[in-house]
Image (cartoon, rainbow, N blue to C red; front, side, top):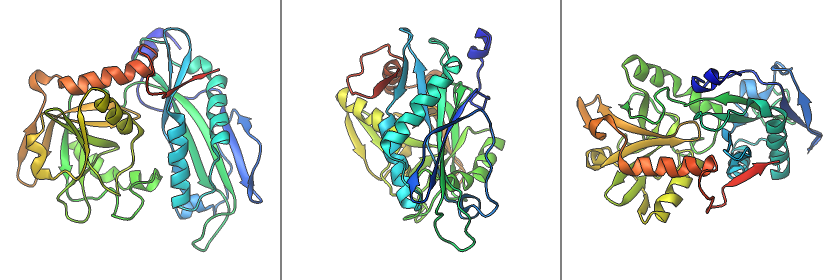
Length: 339
């Protein structure tokens, strides 16, 4: 790729050379296979197509100034995929298989890792699907674990710049005691209509509330929500929220900065009291929130002065990305070098 391409890289799919596949049949995982095809051959009655037996992860690899490729907290992604697999009765991918697949696919596609200094990364998408044929509602007996990669730029085209979001009361991302805490495609499909409404109204994403009472903040579109109040980092606590690995990292960093971390229910009525708010996740890292619009009462809650990210969000963002890119020591043990 030309250097100009790295600068303008969108967050979208771009073909790379190889992907990794591994099949689960007869009660066990087979050997890893390397493929250059972008397609899979799947049975018309596969459970992933009919009953949503599907899980995925999102990860990133970064090229450092020293020429080393770094991958961020892969063990936590492996753990979350195990938990999702257990939750919807998929075959569990062992950590050893998960690691071998992601490290191998990065090495095979090394030329697609964006160079240091462009604000881009290699996005890694592990995918686990039920491929066995079933017409009755039951788990499949056969599965496919697949990993592909693609170079990406910022998730929001604005990058690390404040965005406006709107509260969504007419749609629910996930139900209490449902699959909200699992990384399954159905949760994202459930958000597509409300996200389109938000985009059409000029907002970057929707802010979902709890499905039961519509009283508490849940998730900010495809990301976790957090708020800064004085020396406190506050993020929602709910069984329907995906446990974001980025949010976990920010909480550890906030504690290391001497902040108090609170994971608790956040009422909508509390939103005006925050000094800063943001959305966080693998794709965007941190997206500072400039305004939250509440259509129910036509109120707007504003946070970013002079249209700039707040000081705490900025410090957290730069500290985390410095670790990911190898510009700061990894005191937390989050980084593995791809060799």
